[in-house]
Image (tube, rainbow, N blue to C red; front, side):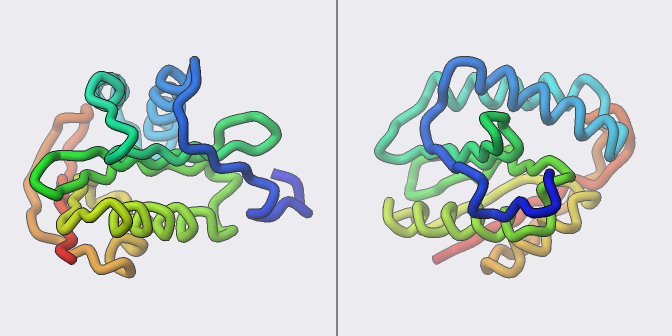
Length: 167
């Protein structure tokens, strides 16, 4: 990120393009290994979830927000329809150099607006106790921590957390 770069320099697109699934998987694998020491099982989890999203994609219900700066993907968020007026928030990630400029808040506002415009009455997400900055954004939008469970699914002991939002 350059010192004069602002959130206005970031393009957010809402359609997947060739290479996006692989790049988003790669970005999660690299960043979560570096920042949280997650193993390859986490990268496989992301890859499988993105493949599931693509296989079930419905442009009337589902949405991606792909953040680019200088034609490089630097952030991502996904809304996945789960039926019964329920959506799942998944794969919220922003490269470290682009954190703190309001991009996370902007993505959450876009998520919430799409949720409302498509008539969803419920949304949920799964994360871990280590994602405190993201959890702050979820709580600020009205999500509530509803479940916690111990896990070693990503190659280390952690607490998985579920957040729910009812509108």
